[in-house]
Length: 342
Image (cartoon, rainbow, N blue to C red; front, side, top):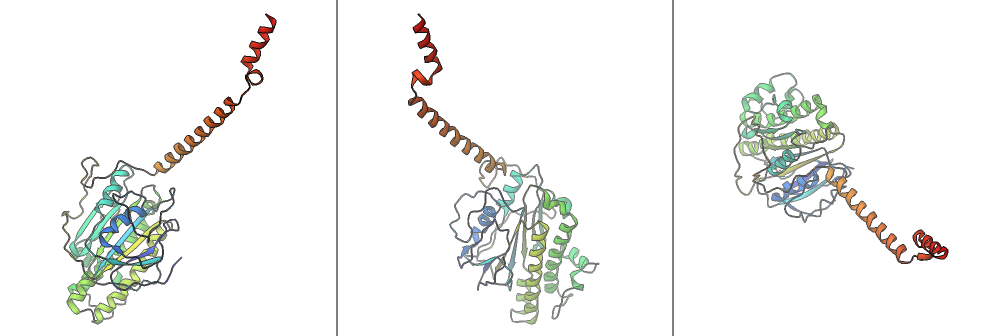
């Protein structure tokens, strides 16, 4: 159910979530460094430290979302996203990434080749694993590729109300390129619907900084910045609805809006269209033992079997203790008859 709720300042907004992933309405702040743990828990993975945050309640053991999509928007503290599940203040907005979650997805579901896509158009950074290499190989990444894509058929320029935005200006082009990438991702997912039907969870992490560049270039009181903010809010709302529908209402879509990060992010560099094969041994994230979705089933089978066996032992022991050997035991009964005959 959608609720109308807004948070002033940097925020985490849950655009879409299935009913079995329970986000509670409230103004509970969450630290930026805890966002990866929150994403991991929504996907059913364990984390090293318990997340003491009341915004997310424990979900069902046998149902987990098929995908998690996190969109980070830099340069704005909040967006008008009225159709959302919940919204929370974001405190301590330090830079973060979902590398640890991507490592977990790949190590646990390597044979199923899940989709792992991490994208930052402003830095021309694209990281893909699994089936994403085949599906998103034609996704425009560099500004030159996106500039060419904006002039082709199906470009967002034909449907967006640009108003004060100039398609020839560099800052405006960066913002429009990010909108185009969001459009192309949903278009590719619609073309490859089989991705949402497998048993492995998919992970998408997108970082958008076009608004930040527009605010730096024109100022946050400029018409360009206001028009871009309104466009991005509408695009993200539709993007969340499309992805949620493509995954059969079994996806979590989050939007993090942050004015500026408090510290620079030290990140391991990756080349464009890199496909790195990660092996679980020697993992730098000190991950737990391998886990799969059958764990909950096996756990319940073993648990209830042990309970049934324990109850059976108690019942049998009680009956043996209160048994009359002369009447209840066939061994004693036959022995007594043999003694009488002798």
